[in-house]
Image (cartoon, rainbow, N blue to C red; front, side, top):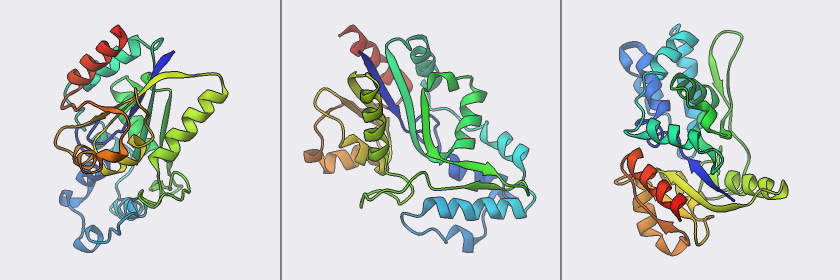
Length: 238
């Protein structure tokens, strides 16, 4: 049986937030205050939609965005980790569940030639409209009270594992690698024998410590891709 690796994207695979990184395209690399202050809790996708509309109004086009986006740094050791996973696809299945969007993630993974490592990417669908403006939609509808309205990562993970099971694919364990508050919900899906890997000093680590009674899996913190790689090698040896 393979191990299922589940990655968050922002501040996990890449060492920044792709949605806020794109603001470098804006005039003077800043948003107007009224736009910057328009975010409502749980409605990040709508907020990003307004930012993309504003960038389009400033004449920012696909090539401008792509040039900025592929410059986002990968987290230290992450590309080496992804190449290791790619060389061991007989041992690992690997997915991304992210609150970014399809276009940003595709650009970034393709530029580093690591897109083939991932079996599926679950994120908010994005397209360029006929005017050349980037548009983004909510990933799905869910009824989880703790997650942003556009994406419950636990629901995505549950449905993916259920579909794999129905296709005859069982996993020896699930390893979840993330950093943010919206990664706590899928971590509560993990069972004994699975591994939650929160990034040191980030919100997920703090949320796990606060809600430890919700967690059945083991916990292994990380600060670089090298530590995740070392842990995966240890799991393979087991």
